[in-house]
Length: 321
Image 1 (cartoon, rainbow, N blue to C red):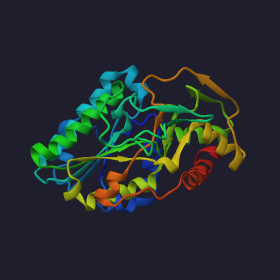
Image 2: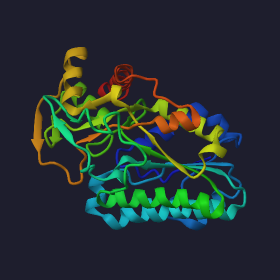
Image 3: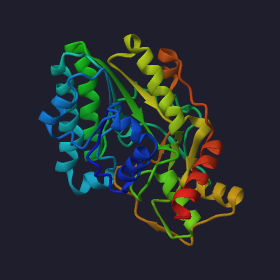
Image 4: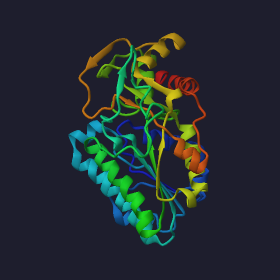
C-alpha cells in the first residue's frame, strides 16, 4: 500500500507514481498494490488505512529547511503532528506493525561544538576531533531551525512509543540521500540539483562559500538499511541510527563541481554566490558504526559509482526531456 498526497514541490511524487503504474498497473488492478491519495494530517483516513498494516515506512514530510522558515506552522503540522497521527493510527490498529521513521541530521543542529578546519575546497572536522570519522548518535540533540524541531519531535515520539507502548519503532537520521528517480529542487536534493544544472548548462546559485560538506548516500544503500533493520527489529526497536554517507563518501559542492568538470566535462553556465542559508551545517559526515553493530549495515556504493548512475538517469529523464 502506498499513501501519498502527491504534494511534492518538484512534481517528483506524481512522476514516480506514473512510473509505478506503468510497471505495476496489473498489481493495482488485481488488488495486490493499493494507492491511497491521503495526507498524514488526516487522522481518520490514516486510521482506516493502517488498520491491518504489518510494516509502516513513514517517509511523508515537509523535507527542507527553507520552507520551514517561511511557513513553520505548515511544517509543524506535516512533520510533527503528521508523525504523531501515523503513530497513533498504528497504535490503535492493534496490529503492532514494524514502524520506521526517516528523521534527519538536522536534529544535531549547527554542530557548533565540533572544531572545523577550512581547506581549499571544503570544510572538515579537525583530525584530533572525536568526531573526525563522523557524528555519532550520542552527539547532543541541539536542533536547528523549525524543520529541525519538527523532525526531531517525530524522532523523539517514535523512540518514546517503543518505550511507553512497546511498539516496534525505528528511527533513521538520514543525510544527503541521492539516486535515480529523485526529482530535485534548489532547496532539497543538492547532489542531483548540481548535476542537473551542470548537464543542462544552466546557472547554479551556491548559498555560502560552496565548501559545505555532506556525506552522500546512494538510495540503494538506504533501501538495504531498511530491509536489514526490519529483519532485526527485536534488536533495533526504540533506537535511532545515523544512515548517511561516511568520510570516504563525503563531498562539498565545490568538490562535486570539480568532479563533474574533470570526469564528465560538464559545468553550469554560471556559478553565483548568495548568503549562507540559516541553520546550515558547514560539515556533516555520518558515523554509522552503530548501524553496523546492531544490524550489519555498511555503505557499499561509492560516491563515484553513485554519481555515475545519477548522471545517467538525469541525462535520460531530465536533460533530454
